[in-house]
Length: 492
Image 1 (cartoon, rainbow, N blue to C red):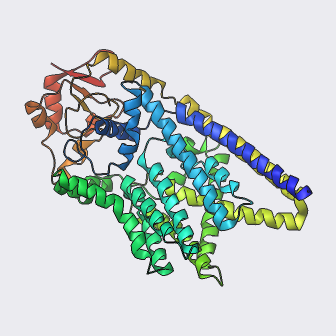
Image 2: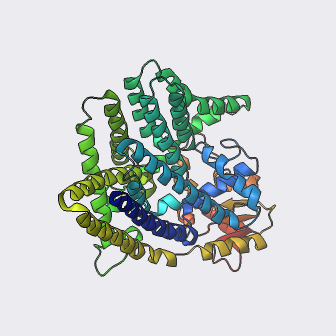
Image 3: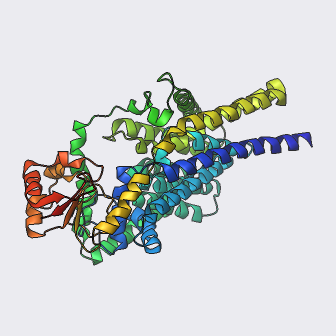
């Protein structure tokens, strides 16, 4: 009976900490300013919601899966600034899905006793805290990929049931269709699937292929196969050729940074220290699990290989292959950081219980909970000052100022309710279009034939990337609109 009450007490403590962490997460989600990428994704989603087609009606080098999921927000909210806060709420719900899937993954692989621990770890983890809350496809793709991992574990264990292989493949395929950054999940998952059952591997691959086959069939019927194929294969490499001019080391985000780790009298804050301890612990535990596979059962060894393999292939991909080391590229890695950090802590807690009794563990757990609560408060309090109020107020002002039928060249992506005045929007297009083999005409030439009523720079500061030809055309044909500080220009 005492053990039962003890387990309930531990569960209540971890649940209380989780609720507190999620309270802060939701506050930051609804309050923090919108990243320029979020405006871009919302802009492209608005175009999809209006019935426009990617690749032909507007420039894109990603798949439409994310936009299809978020498009109903526009149908529900209409022309209102609420589309942005609603999208942030949906992103928060997706994050809750990641937490739930992570807890379930831990439960079926490590046992249910500490299944809430990785959930708490991920809800706390400072790097990349904000990115889990933003409007971007990375989070939805990660959620689907974790579902794929869970499905594959089911498939490995359930020898007489073929359906988990198909379900796992479908989840992996859907994650890739949302964002190809989850390729490490799929590559490692495919390798483990072959090792587990070559006979059932075709069913697994069928699941991966189905979402893409349906998409390609639809594009073929619509006559867009050639431009779609180019946009998803060659175009991303062409557009990212400019990345060599903006080198970001893989360790850049782990230097002192008050954006993620809070402010203090010293650059080395508690947020930074705790974050780095968690990441290092996860890497050590993950490496240990990878090189010491479970003895005896092949299935358990394959499951360890699946999880640890995805973790380290994702880390290696971030270090070696991603040209720009932005914090959103750490989203999928952070899930496994939480998993393996919790793995190590759970083993330590169990050892402490046997060595020092429940009293010792109680002291450690209370200290652990206090640390997470205090660091979360200190790290995230400044973020509540970096609000989105000014951004949303400007959107409301734009709705009142610019007729909804006028065409707008939107450099930032915030003007989601207006038809576009140029095929590329929400991107610094003059910085990379020279590398693109199938590019639209330069902005000046395009506007001379297809005039636009407005150009909106917003806070993106992207005029500095413009060519001399485009700047001269804008200066000659557009003038600033009063009250927008030069961020909105109107045709003369």
